[in-house]
Amino acid sequence: MLAVNGLGHRYGTGKNAHVALEEVSFTVDSGEIVCVVGPSGCGKSTLLRAVSGLLRPTKGASTLWDKEITAVPEELAVVFQDYSRSLLPWLRVAGNVEFPLRNQDLNRVDRKERAAEALAWVGLDGAGEKYPWQLSGGMQQRVAIARALAYRPTLMVMDEPFASVDAQTREDLEDLLRRVRTEHGMTVLLVTHDIDESVYLSDRVVVLSSAPTTVLTTIKVDLPVERNQIATRESERFVHLRGEVARLLRRSSD
Ligand SMILES: Nc1ncnc2c1ncn2[C@@H]1O[C@H](COP(=O)(O)OP(=O)(O)OP(=O)(O)O)[C@@H](O)[C@H]1O
Ligand SMILES: [Mg+2]
Image 1: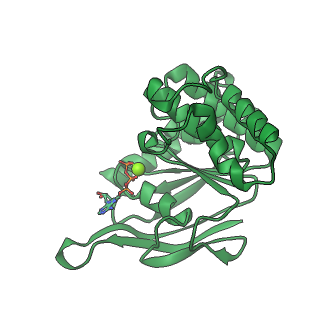
Image 2: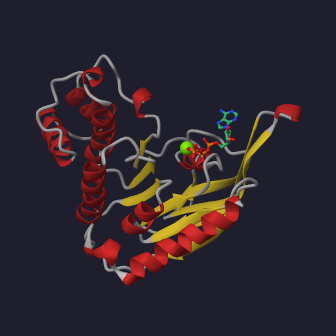
């Protein structure tokens, strides 16, 4: 479904040039959850911005259903790392979640229902009438997640989406994402710096090197589809896989 082909990006020119991505290639199949992990500053956000059509890479390209991505595809939703800049401060929470739905073939009542459902999914039922700035950082991030879920994108691109929420909420959101993926046939590409999260959430983990950034390896997560925050994380296979990712990351940043 998604193919990232020899993607490279250099910020700036001449003496001030900074190569954020050397050459990155991988694919994401329809219905998969793929997590990207890599050392801090190795270009993960740059990669997601390029894949989402928000940044034109200086090398290579990405394709969605064999079509080159040059602008944000309609069937794609993004959750940014910097949530504080992603909500519209003059709209209430419900208004923010409904906002992207205006372009979909839904009437006002359906839009409201969709937004309310997504807010309930992230544990924010009742917060719809508040303004974003009346919520904590973690709650704002959940609003951004609800907005993306309400849109029901074919491809969801997420940059450290659970970084600012507490541990319990984070686990709930991980399980929610896996459930919604199955129920609505979504495909997810997600960046995290949390090794355990990358294994728990995904079908495959793409491990990036430190700069000059390339794909070190892709690890298939052959855990059962049904996962459980306690039993899965205790399982021998999980411990083995997380060790594999951790070793690769350790070696790449040495
Ligand atoms: N707009 C920009 N102009 C110049 N350099 C940039 C720009 N955005 C990012 N960079 C640089 O490119 C490199 C990769 O940045 P990026 O934000 O993609 O990394 P990251 O892996 O997402 O980092 P983190 O783990 O902190 O989220 C960094 O060295 C960063 O300083
Ligand atoms: Mg980043």
